[in-house]
Image (cartoon, rainbow, N blue to C red):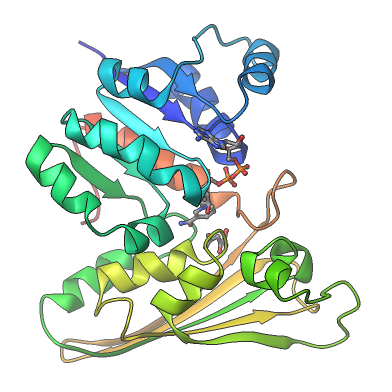
Length: 268
Ligand SMILES: NC(=O)C1=CN([C@@H]2O[C@H](COP(=O)(O)OP(=O)(O)OC[C@H]3O[C@@H](n4cnc5c(N)ncnc54)[C@H](O)[C@@H]3O)[C@@H](O)[C@H]2O)C=CC1
Ligand SMILES: O=C([O-])CC(=O)C(=O)O
């Protein structure tokens, strides 16, 4: 029998995931979505030829086995709480929101639900999780994004930083992944996920650069552990709709969804 899926947040990621579930994820059925703006969502659903209702987060939690959360960080709790209290599986890439609301893990435990924080726009969380079973000495991440990917970042807007006339790379932030995720909640969910996978967000070191020489959202990670030393880099192609979000993020959620029903799972 098919498992039913609800999508909360019908923007850049949500639209890509919904389209793929409807066409190419056997064993999963898209049942409903919830959205910030019902009228916009209904128009988009029609243009994609998808006939599912737009419902509230509560109705999504009541009717769907799996909730794919792709809404802004501020909406995370209102979607995650009812879903997990009802024992649902919540797939998300909102690492920053989980750091801000750690109690959500207790809600999942009490309700019998599960949060799957998909790898999102990052790589190597499998190796970081494995290393964390031993002793990790340090984790360092450097993010470099083109100015257009950071223009709407909370920290940039609140501090009135003009990134449009940048002639050379500008260091916007240096500190812990926790502080970074708080200042840039829509831009370094990946740093939050890295912190959660490894030695915690407080000990994970982060730099964020606005770099006019870059066309892609780039992350460099270096890990030093008692089992291995490793480093890796990813250059994410920004989506047209929301340059802060790389194209691979939605694909990561689709891969996580496919794994739920797959007879063979590859990777931890
Ligand atoms: N971990 C990772 O690698 C990445 C994580 N993200 C995170 O994923 C989330 C979604 O990103 P995008 O699709 O690019 O954002 P987006 O801005 O394109 O879409 C978000 C959608 O959610 C809707 N929305 C607003 N309030 C809502 C509510 N209360 N309930 C349901 N929907 C609501 C908005 O109207 C919008 O359509 C963000 O939290 C972002 O920070 C984004 C990129 C990478
Ligand atoms: O971390 C994020 O939220 C998004 C990101 O860097 C990317 O898409 O490359």
